[in-house]
Image: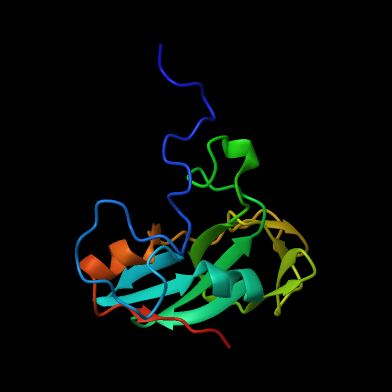
Length: 167
């Protein structure tokens, strides 16, 4: 019989103060090795957005490789790698990354309390990039292919990655 659903065989793996398991490469010290990051590559430009910064700012407007982007963060999602029982794991949050232009208009996003709102119309957006209230309700931003990774893995394969440091 296999392990029960919701059980993690790698309890404690994502503790930022522990070295990466089975990784013997050089560690890029710009971030802690197990800092979670959202990463994107556009036009050969690599960028990383640390979850620690996302948790503080909530929403990031940024240009990578000539493309205006919006990174949305929502707190609450639990880590699958923290505790033996996932339901007891730390809340690390979740992130989505989208083109900030919709139907030819560039939008600037911000957090108002627990809501993601665009400056231009006041529409409210979900973490999935869909307007759920306001004049743009039902419209969807174009998702951008990205990863949610540990920093050590990104740095090992893409050492020239630019790190967003926050406002």
